[in-house]
Image (tube, rainbow, N blue to C red; front, side, top):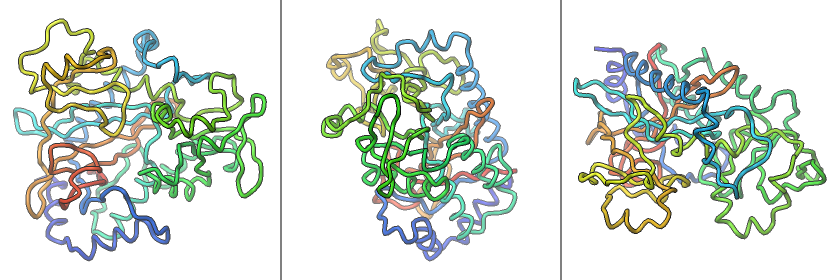
Length: 397
């Protein structure tokens, strides 16, 4: 029996509702913050064998992102209306989302769901990891970090990427109405950890090639933008767009951390170009000349969406024939999530996000997880169930 299986048995035997409630109170103390998503009762304990498979997927993603013809393959990924000037040479962050499945030998293996060139919930996840460790007896031979020895090394690396040599007041975390975002708890923890202010895009203004914002009534120049803004979400917010005081096509004197163009490039758009045992068959809908007979084994996804919006899990010819812009959709072979996490009632399934930094090269930092007992993954679903929701991943050292 592996250390991970022993840790799971010990965790379940020692679990109490009191510990879980203390965890929930700990994760947002003093913020008077009601979360819009559920936090799971349990973390995931990962074996050394499954960690090797996860890193195999990571290496395939890394190889793709360093392909000599990457720019050629992804030249049509960014819609012209959303293109932003001064694109970086590589994405500052990559989030790799994969399903935990089971192979023909009964072993767990990852299947890529999608990957994204975005900043993700780094600071929230750091604090969630710590909360699990404070309120549960997580064995010392487990760590939430892949390439870092401890949380201080992780936080130092994140600070270096986001702040570089700038003062925190000259770096902002950018989104649409941050205080209303479902992930606003991450904004609170990012301000706590990095000292940077969450700012709405409509509160940023341009003077010449410079960007500014007000903090505590003081006009401050913006040197770096830690970007959480999703540009196709902005496109839907006509009220916010009407207030914009920025020309994104201009040569602005600012550095984007997670440049907006990479949101489109490192995305579902890239998956049809990948050839890996960890990547399910994925094709652009407009390039399919003959639809497969077994459409029930496929999922239809829009290229430009987030949080599962517009996804068709029950695909039919009628649905496909009704798509007016097939060039903006992919047809992907379904993966079967394996319910491998024992819980007090039925086992839970998991989708894991490997959260990666680009330092001198792309490296995996840590993971977050979403536990589910329903048909659809994600923290927005299964709210009537227990032992589901946002979670952490601990690896055998």
